[in-house]
Structure formats: structure tokens, C-alpha cells
Length: 468
Image (tube, rainbow, N blue to C red; front, side):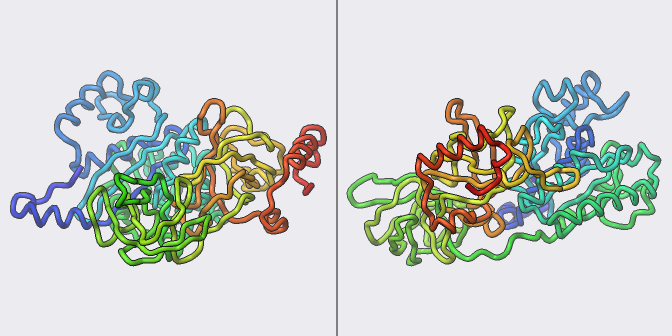
């Protein structure tokens, strides 16, 4: 939803040009259950006058019958909690996305659930976010889910975080409550890789410090949530040089054209650029580029492209076209894994591993440690349960083609799929070749070695983390 601007009436073409070239900021709201995430988003939209009249009339009516905000209050959470089960329980279950814009920026918000049961949904929303708004209930302080979501944000490479201390109205807007929560969170966050943390006291229900400042929080002299979102400079990962196209399909409409289609994960890319096909290592130059079906001289990051090359090289689905910094090719990879299934992860079990456009059989060969989200200590375990996070060694039948996650998020991730149900049961970040991969020179375990490893894990679990 776009903001109101007088330029729309005066010069629509100029307005559209300005709107098209604004920065886009993707952010999530997360934190523990009932901290007010959906209400905060509703308040952002309401106080910024970005709700249509029919939407406002609908939630005004629904607030009287199913609203959770209290007698006579407008329940702004209903703007994003659209599922019937969400409205009945007053909680967020699935990730809800909303778009809006201001004079300065365009935004895509992901409202993520706070229940531990739906941590996997939160991780999904955070995977594409550049900034996180982590809410903390002023009455409860820093909770387990606050720590869990903060750790996941750090793990997924989010460098900018707003700690929104919500429900300040419930503690009489006391500054000492805010300062205590700030102190507790800063102590915990020393162990996280989040360089930019902004603390903002607010009341999403009453509208204090969300878009507008009020006298209730006169002791706070910093920006409101909206002011910070409009002005914050996003800290991205280190500059990455090189184009990346995970090939999804080969397009051959006639004998005169052979194009490789896929998303441009990192760019730019222009006609005449050299590209190498991985894993074959064959190289050629870009002959033509089509973006969204139209011929183009160049393409930029995020665009879907079809690239034709000057030479006939072997390249198909699952391969990658790249230049610049060479991607990593490995069958054994160190990974950080978030387990998303109620059926526990057991090392040695066969799954499908999807990385980019490549899907290959694979298995978790070893769990090096599981992370305690409260203390961030590393625990030695034999299995991973629902919503647990661990550092593991992934072993795949075909070599994965990737960049380390901290170098390029878009090519450094993967998912784990159950082979029988086709359900995604895990997601993770690829960190680099494992020590075993480098020791064995890339040699894969034989079937006999894998069978021996499985037998030892089953009958001698105390050895499960030792090198065999």
C-alpha cells in the first residue's frame, strides 16, 4: 500500500518514477507469544494512514465481536492475523506479509509467530529479512523465545535489530523497567553477531512511539519505530563480487536458441560477460539476456533471467553459471541446521537435500553440537528435536555448489526434505567444506563405510561424535 502524496495528482509519471526507485527494506516482527507483534504492524499502518476505509470499517466491526484489545478498543492485530484459528486464539500461526511505503522507503513486513511450536515459520520469515523488530513485553522482560528468535536472527545473518519494549502502558511507562530490560538484553546479545541494536520503548495498543511520540514517554529522546525504519542504514554482508545463476531449466524453443533460465542471485550481469558452468568447469561468454521474457543488455540481482551463451556447453538443471569468486563444490559440508519436524533428526538417515536448483540424496553424517538458546552453550547430543539448532556435517551424493552463507545468503542455504512425505523437515546455512571433506580430498564414503558408521551410531551412541 502506497502512502498519500500530492505528486500523484500533479505528476503521476514523476511519482511512479520516484516510487520505483525507492529503497526496499524487508523486515520481520518476532519475539515471544503475545508480545504484540501483529498489533505493532497494525498500528504502523493505521497511524501512517495506510489502511483503506473498507479495511478500517471491517476491523472496527470485528473488534467488537472477536477483538482481544479490550472494551471499545480497536484490535489492530486483525489486519494481519487473517486465519480463522489465529483470530479465535488471538495468536499468530503462519507468516503474514504486508507491503507499504513512505516518502523515504518501500517496506515488506513479515509478521512471524511467537509460539515455540511455530519457530520454523519464524525462521522462514527471517531468511529473507534485512532487519528484525524483536518485541519484548515490558511486564515479562527477556524470555526464552526472545533469546531463541534473537539467536536465529543472528544465525541467519540479520545485522540490524530493533528491540521494541512493548506494553509500556501496562507498567505505567516507567523508565527503570525499560532500562532493566535493555541491560538484560545487552548482556545476552554479547554472544550474538548483531552489530546494530536499537532499543525503543512503546505501546502498540495506545500508539506511543510507534509512529508518533507522546508525553507518556517524554523521558525517551530517541526516534520512533517508523522514524528508525525510514532512516536506518542497513548493514549487509561483505561486498560479494561475481554473478550467480542456479540453472532451473534449459529453454530450447527452436534450433537457433538455447537458453539457461534461473534467478540472478547476485549480479549485475551484462552481454559479453564470461561465465563458467559448475560443476563441469566449461566457460563461455554471454550472447544474449532476457529478463521477464524481454531482451535486455544487462540484469541485476533478483531478476529472473534467460541467458544464451556463445558456445555450446553442457549445463542443465542443478548446475550453476557463475563468474568472479569461484563457488564452493563439496559433498561434505559444515552446516548450521534448524530442525523443523516432530520426528527427530537421527544421523545417517537418508533425506533429500535441496540447495539452489539442485536436489540430491543426502544425510546428516554427524551432529557436532546442539545450541542451548538460553545460554548459547554447545551440548553434545545424538539427535536433534523439533526447533532445535545444531552444527552438523552434511554428506550428499552429489556435490553442492554454493557460497558460504556469511558471504552470500542467497546461495548459501539449503533445506532438508523427507523422502517419503516430501515435507520440509529442516533448513540450514552452509558454512564451508568440512574437515573430513578436506582430509579425504573430496572422496565420498563408500556404502560399506556408511553402513559401518550407521551400525556404530546405533549400537555405540557414546562414540557418535568421534571421527571414525
